[in-house]
View (tube, rainbow, N blue to C red):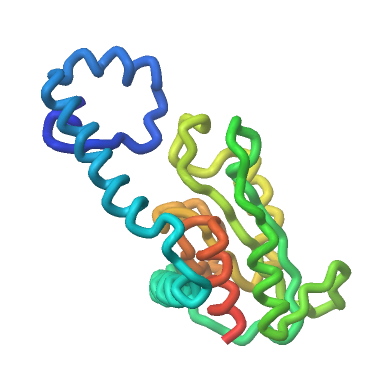
Length: 203
């Protein structure tokens, strides 16, 4: 609760919900009201500002702006960029499956490659370059901040044949990616970053 008492209004991904509820007794009523008021003001200011007021042209401008930010956020953590060809095979290692929450669609990356003229065949020909997509966002239900044993075992088997790993996770997780395969950081697995990572691969 030190963070709340110091001015933080929202706690992200606490792993011990019961402990958080109990610890809230250490927060003064004035501090709690202040946090709720700031949250309410943010919702009113930002959500209310755009609700129902965006036409297709405005939405397209916002999408272009968001895509530009995402393109700048994607970066290599290890290795160098090399051409992967016009046909790529893709395998997913999904560390986010299994909890109580639904996960975003995982097909946006491949669809964006296809839209950029790169084939993603179900049965690739010999010699086709291989990309491994690793999805590992923070999830409170995991009770950990790193990759699970199942994901690590998958990676061990995939790395000898991989040409690139796209890490849809925090860059610190590169420490768990075995071998010396180039690793591209795309931060999280939402559609925005899947599109940005695919554009990076396609260019």
